[in-house]
Image (cartoon, rainbow, N blue to C red; front, side):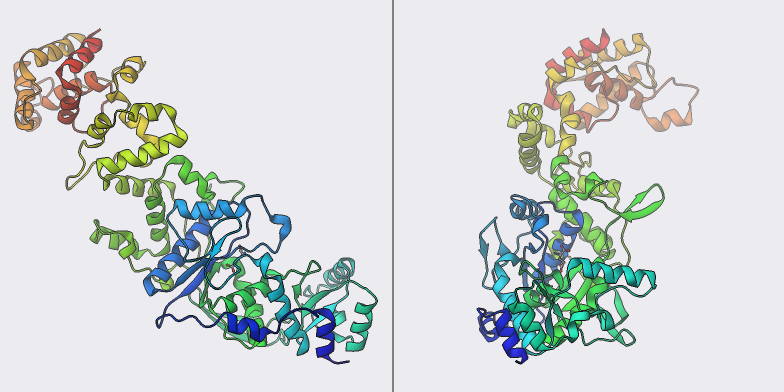
Length: 549
Ligand code: GLU
């Protein structure tokens, strides 16, 4: 009996690997094109870190005219969730990150390098496991889980490095005959890789993000095919990324320590390994402690959170680019009207340790992103969000023409107003422009410097009688408020007031505040002239009447 016969006994049906090598040829892409992937388990949940990874992958492949694909890693069938793939596909779609190849729904895919779902690739993995067995580079292991656990316990007591390696790897030294005999007897087994490594030797790895890292060689005889016939992550990674002709593996840095094993697998299979880029996780400041954003503890760890809150997809992506390359911020400042797609992302400029996630900053990016939108776009996005999340806002937006006027205030000019950071803020932001909401509100009137009844009443009455017409242009409108201030004995100019503070009780700005508060019940609103123009004199005088009561 030799290895070949043993391999045949274990995997009698599988194809020769030459079949797969031909079926998945080298890709014909231009020099320097990056082929990479997002490879989640189908748990339905997409962590913000997964989106971050996908964004980086998508961007790099766009920059180099490469290929980005979505591979579903479902070899751990315990972790599966119903419609888990759809959840991932849709999450990426929400952020307009569209892979070139891979799964597009629960069971459909596109692209020539599939199947893109690992559970459908069982025969492929087995063909390569057979190939390794034929060369004596893999072997059946008959140890039961209890035996493996007993080995681990012994190692722990003796304070020895844990694992299935060297003298501890009981099954690696069985003769081929013995292996064959036990298989024929019906004993159950798994397939292990026979590692040629030695722990006392070092390997050098150059990571595209982490830089040069030295590791001891791998010497663990890891499981490559489990009892259910499916591969482990490590084996599937090597096979898939080889056959899918991946050039760059961009993944979370929890996998960095597996690099020695992965390089060894590629080497023993006779292949060139891909380049690796290990991304540091997104961190959170938790009462002074820096820790990973956690699915369990942090709502913002789930990408669904951003959709629910109505944080624009573009803002999230811009913010993630900020985290990815700190040079993005300067680029954005210098290129405020360009699309972020034009920014050149560089892997070697990514931070080696985890960046802190800063919600305040993200919302700030949200404000800028929304400020750059046209009123029409703001309307569409707010409406789309409202339809999913806020009936009342839908009603408010029904009168599109009116809503467009509101969203048009201080928009489209060189310094657009930055007052909305997310769609869930829109209602609160525009509420006072709707009479039903305005009159039912119990909010008081936060008058400031000028706050006595008589003066307020006088300002409002005079304003309507003498100083306001809908037909005024902005300049006239502005001059009229000054005139009103003058007539009331307030300073017509702030400068004048500051020069002679004893001479005046208040100034034109304080008069404006009275008008603003009476009109909106707020001290802070966008341009008052535009608000008055939209509301018109009739609605304005009704509001003033209420304010005077
Ligand atoms: N399924 C692995 C994970 O979700 C993929 C890691 C990789 O990108 O290779 O962590």
